[in-house]
Each structure stands twice: as C-alpha cells, then as structure tokens.
Amino acid sequence: MATIFSIGSRVQTLDRWGRDCAARTLLFRRHCEDLRVVRIERISSLELPELAPYRTLKRSATHATLGIFVAEGDKVLDRLLASNFTVVSVLLIEERLAEYEPRLQARPENITVFVCVKPVLAELAGFEIYQGVLAIAKTPPPLTLDKILADSTHPQFFVAMDGLSNSENVGTLMRNCVAFGVSALISGETCCSPFLRRTVRNSMGALFKLPVLESANLVQTLCALRAKGIKCIAAHPRPAGKNLSQADFTGDVCVVFGSEGHGISQDILSVCDDAVAIPMANNVNSLNVSAAAAVFFYEANRQRGNS
Ligand SMILES: C[S@@+](CC[C@H](N)C(=O)[O-])C[C@H]1O[C@@H](n2cnc3c(N)ncnc32)[C@H](O)[C@@H]1O
Image (cartoon, rainbow, N blue to C red; front, side, top):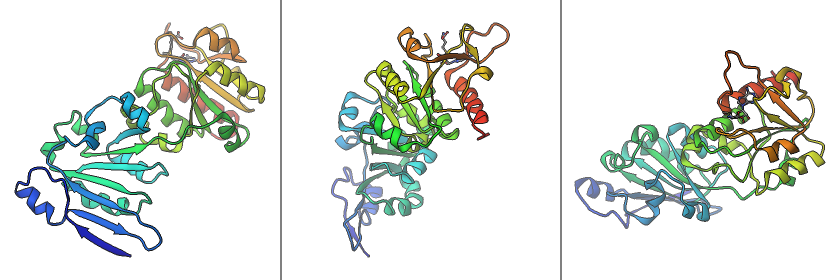
C-alpha cells in the first residue's frame, strides 16, 4: 500500500495556519487492488460550492435531487462511518482530524475531508450540537415493498408513519424501531423526509441500520401488506378500539402511527385491521408519537417472546 502526500489546491487565504497546513495537506491513499482516495482539503471559509449543504439546516430540494443528506455530531458520524452508506465528504475542525483519519482511511469510497479552524466552523448555527464534525452522505437507492418483504424474517414487524411532520419525532421513532427490532419503516407520502438533518441527528444514526421505504401512497402500501397477510394495526388514542394488551402482535404486523396534530387520517384508519389504544389516565388525550411507539414495540416484543 502506498501513501502519497500532496498539496491542497483550494486553500483560499493562506494565513500562517493555512501555510502550515498546506505543507501537509492533501493525503491520497492508494490501495493495491483499487484506487480509493481520502483527500484532505484545508479551507479557511465555507464558501466552496461543495460546502453548501453544510451551510443550511434545511434539506433543500437540491439535496433531495442530488440524493444527499447531512449527518452531524460524533455519535452519528461514528455510526455513519461504520455503515454501508456512501460518504461524500466530511467537514471537521483541525483538532478532530487525527481521531477520524484512521476510520476515514478504512472506508471503501473516495471521501473529501474539509478541515478548518474552529472559528470558521462556529459560523454555522448549532456548533455545540455537531461538536465540530459533520458529513455529507448519499441516500440509499429507493426500496421496494417486495425488497423489504423478502429481507424480513417471520413474524414480520413493520412500522408505518402517516403524516408525521416533526423531524425530531421521526428520528426518535427510527431509533425506537432499531432498538426494538423493527424490520423496516414505511414513510407515508405526507411525512417529512427521513433524511432531514434533525431527523438523522435524532435517530442517533439508527437511520443507517433501518430500511426505510418512502411510499407514494400509504393507503395502497398498507393494502398491499394486508394482501400478503400482514395485519395492519393503527395506533390510535381514541377509546373506541382495543386496548394495547388486548391486541395480538404475535403474527406478521405493521403498526401505523399518526401525525402529531391530527393523528391517523380516516383513509388510513379505514384500511387498517385494528385500532389500538394505550390506556391513559388523568384525561390525557394522547402521548408523544415516539413515546407511544416505544410502548407498542415493548408490548409487541413481549408477546413475541423477545422482551
Ligand atoms: C400526538 S398523537 C396524535 C394526537 C391526535 N390529536 C389524535 O387525537 O389522534 C400522535 C400519534 O401517536 C400515537 N399515539 C399517541 N398516544 C397514543 C395512545 N394513547 N394510544 C395509541 N396511540 C397513541 C398515535 O399513532 C397518534 O396518531
């Protein structure tokens, strides 16, 4: 294995730090069998076009078209680097480079590592949250229903979201899904993207382990699941249906959760087999959706002998 050092081509203003860094800036790593490159580029501002996704807290339509998303913070980046997602670039402060370099070099793809001093990165909102480390990765190719069915073992355990619009809730729900062994998450057409920056962060990287099917029509997807013998259970706080302990989770199931504001839509409810509520005291109307999901998943696993 040969390691080649070269000089960064786009260090923008060469102050003393920049000159020091330029002397040891681009690291190319070549493997005998294939050419994989970790390119370290020292920057003194965030103006490069490749850095645009880092500069916004939103996931713009452009990011969706490019099929990329931003991951931020140590734990999320650790899990991204341990996953089979494709990493495009990493942005970090100089002090963090040494600890990340071995893991970056162990990756199979070409990665550009943008390195800067803390004041440059502190220009981005939320520095404390991302701890001076961020990455851009590619969204995986879209999944099909056939694929998630083929890849899951019986009794199958799917989760669907109808209209969830809060990215933090979606992230926390994903984390619960992975923790409780859900095979795949189905995101309805009215949900926010599973690849929003805040969703990725709140999932704590669970997103990298959870197959997510973005359905263009949740009613049709649930009908297709039912046609395969998978029972669709609506998590619904209204008391008309069954209580959680009366519901049967022992077979193939898909548990459906509704939006923060309006719950599950009538269209979705009408294609579910059951509506099931967690009993609540003191006239509380509903739980936070990810809290409700954790209670459902615990009960499902208990019934399946997985608790
Ligand atoms: C904040 S709640 C929605 C509240 C909405 N106003 C309603 O009445 O349906 C969001 C979602 O969490 C789930 N959920 C919350 N509390 C629940 C409970 N006690 N039993 C079953 N599901 C619950 C449901 O899927 C619900 O659609």
